[in-house]
Length: 335
Image (cartoon, rainbow, N blue to C red; front, side, top):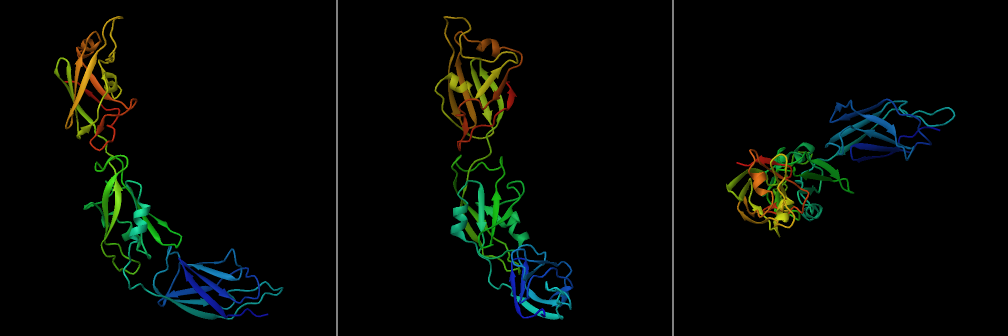
């Protein structure tokens, strides 16, 4: 029974599926040549399809998509054989398929992208057709509220594929860069996509996507000073927010220490009065006014070296203006 050369060829993804009316199972394929626009290709992998042993697959090593062009596929004599007792081999035959180039610029599925980008600081841009990978992953082609992204602001982007095998570019802001947007829910922002090309070099029209950005850059303690014997001023690198019920509500966010003993509100001697305090915020400053009573305030703050350290063991109600808790484990010496 001869191996016939009639049949169909299908291009999908980064490979061709090549179906012929082979009489039965094909054990091996060799001697296949592929020319693209007349140029012999050397990076072709040929195999029998695992789920259909009458289909030959040719993988072009181009990733997800085949490039545009005219492909000539030559099965040399004896390239395939059937599973007959005495294997039948094909005569040489050639077939051609054209992968058309795109003439329409790629577009963004704005509605789907906005749905996928519901998590603050994580943006997902869904394209409606194949795109050039290098341009799609170039952070310079994305601006957040007018500011171009780069490797200092965002992690390396990557591509996911949707159920239709179309690309979704995923961009995540780096922790410690963004100080805009309420934390943790985020505030509205605009991600502008421009300069992305399809696989044939056609450029997308500028497109805006509504996203969420949330502050992920915690305010950091930069200095501390006793501006009066019982008044401690802490200065941070961002504007602050917060309210405190009492002195212990202040002290669960900071530790004041002389290196041996930490300041505590409790009275040193039984039956005497505990310390009290009030705290006010003015821009980047937290000003703590202490009424020491019989606490160890004077002993601790009278030492030759006094430090203040931020901690995250309390309720973290000392935040920046966007509601993000101040950075923990930052220690400064009181001046």
